Picture 1 (tube, rainbow, N blue to C red):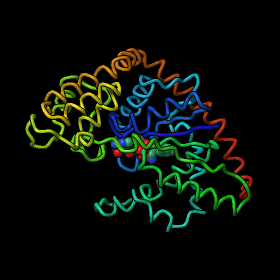
Picture 2 (cartoon, rainbow, N blue to C red):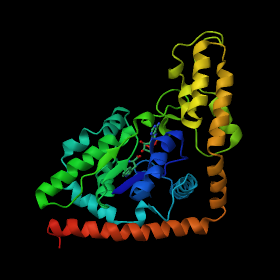
Picture 3 (cartoon, protein in one colour):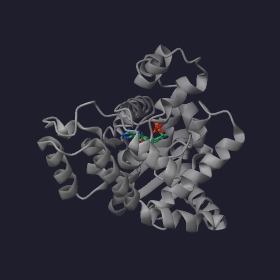
Picture 4 (cartoon, rainbow, N blue to C red):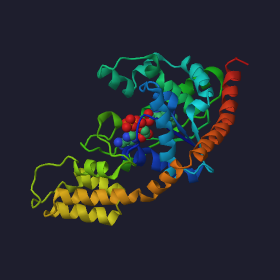
Length: 321
Ligand code: ADP
Ligand code: TRP
């Protein structure tokens, strides 16, 4: 089984990225041949600072490796090191109905927000389809918000296969329902674009402040809270603390007598120790960037050899060779 996923280098990675996509992806490394990449071509639709893109790419590489991606087992690379993705995007674009792209939530949401549209942003799901199909991927671990893009990928693959004969493997999305939508500091979906993130790595004082600023209601500590399981800090605690500990806090909140401040303090401590090993590993990697760059170079060479094989199959089937 081949497993593939990508993440955009558009800023510091947060708990939503970690629990929604990175951890499932890291766990899946054991289950098959995994291909994980830094989607720097994708970042070009919304990030226009060259230096920032370069820094972000390196940061994502450090974050992913620190969190347990094993580059011996997994093919880990930067998307733009495999330009074959772009050629396949063109082939796929020619069988993609406009209507398929027009119905994408990500497109409609951005349109509704009045974001000025460029071709890249509109064509983004086709590039994502190429990312997936070019490795004959079977399984794509992503957060809920990317499910539709994997479905679009399947539709495009079916179209191409119908037109030119069997060429692409049809991928399945894999979404962990328990972490499909990690909430941010305001209770909405945690996302860089909402400014409500808690980063995986960063400066302790600033992150403590973020956790302590989680939005709570104005009920007094004494008041019993029958909706304790809905509490934002409890939901986050369930991700970073042992189940029994999180349950205990939830029960105490429900019964009344536990203040939100104490709950948030506990959340911070568990969150901070949850990533302690990864933090140490990240510091080691950051001190050895030659190693990190060598990992990405090696990953690119391995990815490219598979990508060339599938691209050639597609070129042949549609009469380019
Ligand atoms: P952001 O919304 O911060 O820009 P991305 O869209 O770059 O994050 O998401 C990268 C990956 O992380 C995707 O697979 C996405 O589904 C997942 N992800 C992002 N935010 C969350 C969240 N709050 N809960 C679960 N998964 C998430
Ligand atoms: N679009 C994804 C995101 O914004 C990143 C991505 C690009 C991706 N190509 C992919 C994810 C292929 C999975 C498979 O999060």
